[in-house]
Length: 251
Image 1 (cartoon, rainbow, N blue to C red):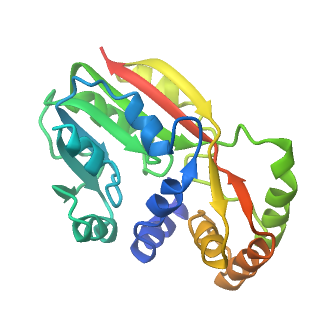
Image 2: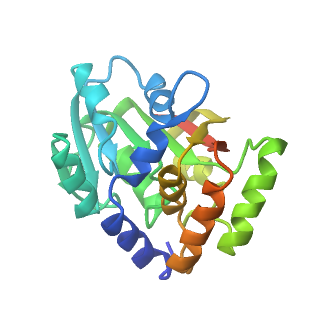
């Protein structure tokens, strides 16, 4: 993560805890939400699960309902406070590049929309491999720049014009080196897929929340508000939210 990105990401999550969960929870695609798609790839036998950069911990309730022993870690105290307010735990402040766990004690690691924003994805993957038992699984979802249907392009182009930039992430929109980085630390990638999801925007409040959920370093708040007003004027809309899911197994 560049020096410019790091303070932005910390400030974003301090000021907007839980916003990623709120937007993804109303994003739907084949089979449900992005959270459901992530969990569908998690081995049913996994009993001890680490949630990497867990944010407001949206995966905790369904995993706890399975009887899983769950632990969430995140660098953002504000996000973890949001998780605690929702009754989700246990959670701990931790750097994903230096996890406070012993070797080989975790059956699975889940990482929802996390790897493209951590400071050093390669170091984080090394820690994932260290804490996973042999045969344990990593299931991660990430933002993707595809698939996006042609019919959505006019709205997306109009939004970018009003923002003055495209939304982005520290790791880029594709993270093309992620599979190779995983393989280097002993994680064998077994699946790497992309799937379309759609976020319904029906009200000015939903338009504002969607814009606020975007990573937009350098964009003035006034410009964000203007873009949200423009989006609200076009409702109801279905905004594409393409997601990538990567599954890997510890050798």
